[in-house]
Structures are given as structure tokens and as C-alpha cells.
Amino acid sequence: EIVMTQSPATLSVSLGERATLSCRATQSVSSNLAWYQQKPGQAPRLLISGASTRATDIPARFSGSGSGTEFTLTISSLQSEDFAVYYCQQYNDWPRSFGQGTKLEI
Amino acid sequence: QVQLQESGPGLVKPSETLSLTCTVSGSFISNYYWNWIRQPPGKGMEWIGNVFYSGVTNYNPSLTSRVTISVDTSKNQFSLKLTSVTAADTAVYYCARVPSYYYGFDYWGQGTLVTVSS
Image (cartoon, rainbow over all chains, first blue to last red; front, side, top):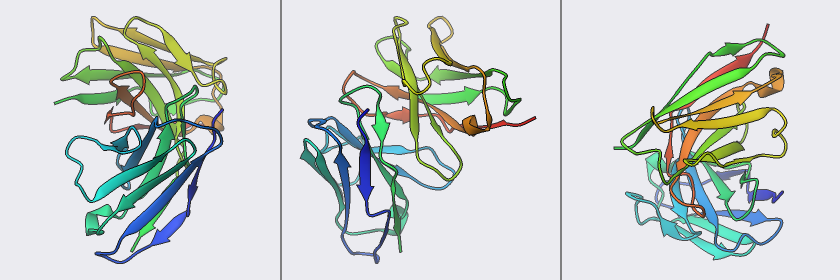
């Protein structure tokens, strides 16, 4: 099983600042990586697929990069609605697996 | 607009079978992969398995001995059965769609909390 590790566990950032979240895989997942945002009491929302392609209606301030085993989600200018937990997920191999999440807090 | 809705008992006794159904609206079941994912309270997510509209399934090896996922194209539904449950199976269970083999989960249900307790 491919294990996904996210860092940091918690990231404290101010409104308007840039946030950089990391995700690492124990083996190459090529570009078969997605990022999700989850707010309390809600289902996750797909932000990025294919490591760098924004999903429908996702603002341009969200960007993804990386391939192989190292990936980054960048939020360029944090808005109040961006404070949430973010998960990466690989879909290169079975079983599909998620990182443990990064909590983005003010 | 694509919508997924989980339904089923919110409380299951230990050693019994957890059964959930996901009803899909705004999208045909055909040509997509349909998934179950769970999230224990306050924890991360675990992919349980999926079913293609043809009935082909993939399961997480950690659960494969206890899981069955099936699809009913006539009702636009798919279902999860998890046998011999314990307290460790207490979680919010989500159903979700994958539009192609190599893609993320693009639509999710709201999730349903299933508690395993006597």
C-alpha cells in the first residue's frame, strides 16, 4: 500500500498570506494525485486532480504541483473561507489512499 | 446537478452487518466508478472500495474479507455491506463518484454517521 504523508500537521497563516502544504508518497504515483478541502461537518471537496489541474469552480488562488513522490498545494492569498483541513490522495495504485491531513488555521 | 445521498441505519450492534445505500441523482450510474470512503470521528479518511457500473469491484485489502459493494443500475444506486462490525468501524461513511479510472473523487454524498454499539 502507498502511504501518503502530509506536512505540517497544522499550519498557522494570516489572511492574505500564502500557504504551502506538502504531501509525500512512499513510492511514485506519477501525477495521479488529488487534493481535497474539508470543512467541519462537511464532505471533502475536490480541489485538484492530476496533481495540478483545478477542478470545476475552484478559484485560481489554489494551485498544485509535483510528480512522482513529492507534491505541493499552494494557496496564494488566503481568504477566510480557506481555513479548513486539506487532504492529498493518490489514485495511481490500489488501494486508493489518503494523507492524514493538514489543518490550516488562522 | 449531481447529488449522492447515503441512507441506512445509524446504529449497528457489534458482530452484525452494516448496510448502506447510496442513491445517485443527476448522473447515470453507467460509465463511472462508485466508491465508499469512511472517516472515524476526528480522524483521516480510509477508502473502502468501489464498484464499476458493470459490477467489477476493488476493495481495500484491510477490509476485503468483510466488504461487499454492489450496484443496481435500474435504481441508480449502489450499496455497501460490512460484516462482523466492531467499535473500530464507527465512522462517517461517504459515497463518492470517480469519473474515470485515473481521477479523484469529484462528487461526494454528505456522509452518514454509523455507530457500532450494543
